[in-house]
Amino acid sequence: MTPQEIKDFLKLIRNTDIEEMRYRSGENSLYFKKSEVEPATLLSEKKNITNKDKKEEGKKLPLVAIKSTAVGTFISFRESDKAPFVMEGDNIVVGQKIGQLEAMKIIKDVNSNCEGKILKVLVSNGQPVGYGQELFLVDVNKQ
Image 1: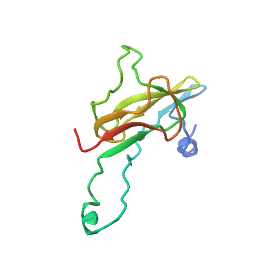
Image 2: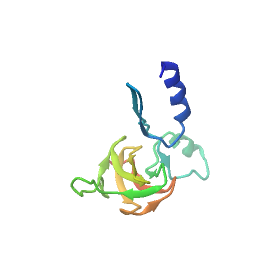
Image 3: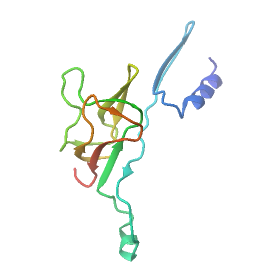
Image 4: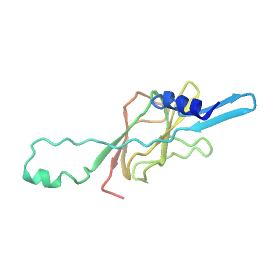
């Protein structure tokens, strides 16, 4: 593949669910892994905006939901030692692996998109989840 063909190919798959891919043609091979952390989704909504609310608008809201980025079965335990990736009360950082999703024998990591303390794990191991479903509640003001 030429460099331009590779660029065109990457543009085509940028907005798909493909996370990792290996391509071989003759002696040439191409491997890539998408690593993107989405911005945190804030749970609270502002109702009545007053002057006081406007001053506090730039502050972090305390609760953030980490949501599923795909449809699949939620995996909360590491395969190697059967220990959970995270538990309620654990502190997490941006990009940390906090679970996995399995669909059609393809495993996709669930990474944290915020920093804070896990207040609630909303799904259990082996539970089917949908796209956008809340998996964890995180208090971003505690660390």
